[in-house]
Length: 342
Image (cartoon, rainbow, N blue to C red):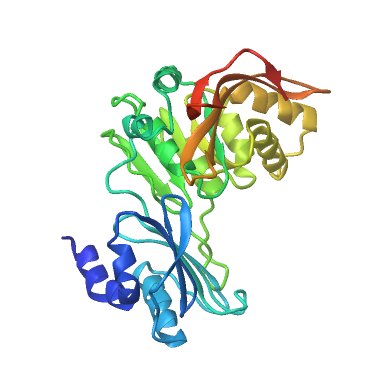
């Protein structure tokens, strides 16, 4: 155990003791604290009420402040949002008053032990073998892939699985807001953004990290999530010699994912007409892989679409390669026809 982990066990875990049972349960994927006396957990994609309780509002506040101190951040009225990561990879998101009206809200996103591999996705039914082989070939061929999906749909897990297809001899730079990915390749550089301090100083944005990455000689760029103007820089990188990029975007359909990239690219400080931005995105993005959390709580790849171009009147042209089929055998991913959607 490293000194960092010993400090965690000696301090933070003590304050999180009311959640100890949930934290030690491998079936729990998310812990949601709405108030000191209201806790929910997610198992198998479904939410259920928990008997876990903090003894008081002060006890919950002490836990959140201790987590912030542990990761070298501050949280309070001036900095009411905390993003952090625990040694086991769990992701912390906390919001405190006055932003959170009912009191402190805490979310702990947990990840299964061990990396989510493509083989595990096939075994769980999230991916079919044909789609697995197709994506492996596409990643190896340095095609640019966007993973699209809603919150909690499994985008980051799929991104990590796809990244494992990158050849071991290549240099990979991973850029994230909160570092979660752990790739098996030997030559990986991990970069993490940093918010400003209470005085507005010291911020390191995703966009700044991406620009620095282009001078770090990457063979592959893996971006955890595209949220803003960095979309323009990423598209530029994908079309100027940095192929094989992987990223995630919050969207409900492949076409929506491309339109969100378009909107975020237009948020940059570069003044380009819409048609020019759309053409560049259509040229940069080769595939969109859509993840969804289904009604039964399972997380599945529901569509793999190839971007074949863009039209001024029709928008982005997408040809489905795989799509989710529902029949008497249940929901399963299968090869699609060649119909075009926008």
